[in-house]
Length: 426
Image 1: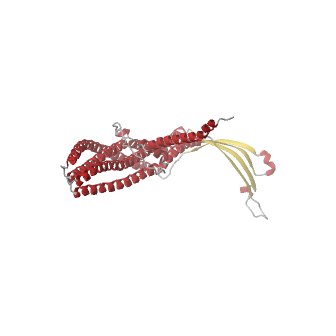
Image 2: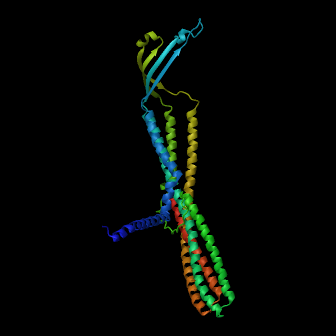
Image 3: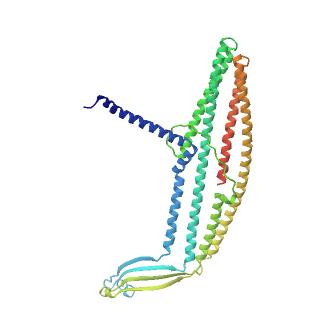
């Protein structure tokens, strides 16, 4: 006999399981959202969704096959050739048999390979390797460029969110003051106009909060767009601390390494041009059937082997013209390299000065915020006594909003500059 009390336990098991499942889902979603709302989370998803980076990764992989193809071209090349020809003569009309033999059957297996081609093969392999190195550098630059863009957009979204936050904080303070002011107005200590002035200011802040909320959603949508995220759920961002990378030299920059690879590619191109004017030796062999008389076909199986050499003698001075093209390419490359050196040092110097001044302005702004905050605290005490004009209190609140807004801009600008400096020092 089953005890009815045992049945109650079984009836609660699905509820317990359901509650546990819901709890796990909520915890998991909370972890996912917290990860997605960090700069690291956005960077990770942006990199994984980028079609440009995937394209460059595919090109790098394709270039590895190019290297294998170059090696394969210098192995023995085997081909099978076959043909059958009949040249009938009708009533004395037709090709001369001295030329066509009337008919022929041809089928051979041919093998040929270049000899003494190590330097040419090494030059071609070096070219493929340099092109692969260029692709790797371009992918790293593209990766850093994407991270810089995501970081900049993240900071823009955070700025809108943070400004909305302290506007909300000010409004909460004004709501508390409004209650006190209303009571003093009813007692005749403050005028009705003072109370209305505070209400008008609160309406202005409400409008600012709505505008900032719309701006934040727009900035967050742009961030999702850059990262390839289709989820439109809003979340609260946090100010990232972007570490300033150690100072590097222009030669260690990825941009400069690209110029170095271009220089090596130009030299490699010159080597390949020179190799075209060296003698080319080939060995060849074939085996099969060559016949022009079907009744003797069994006697016409055979083979042959031999050597061939090709030596360019005159090609209309193409070598000299190719040298001129290389000289122009190298001069252009040097011009870009020198211009990059100049811009590298000039921009880094300018950004370092701007960073130093921005940090100094931020420190001064923090002092201003502290003083205005103390002033507002003193005004709150005086409001309880009814001994401070409401206009002075509202002016102090506006000064606090402006000071906090300026401080936010300084903090965001600091991160912007560090992000830009890190990009140039990559």
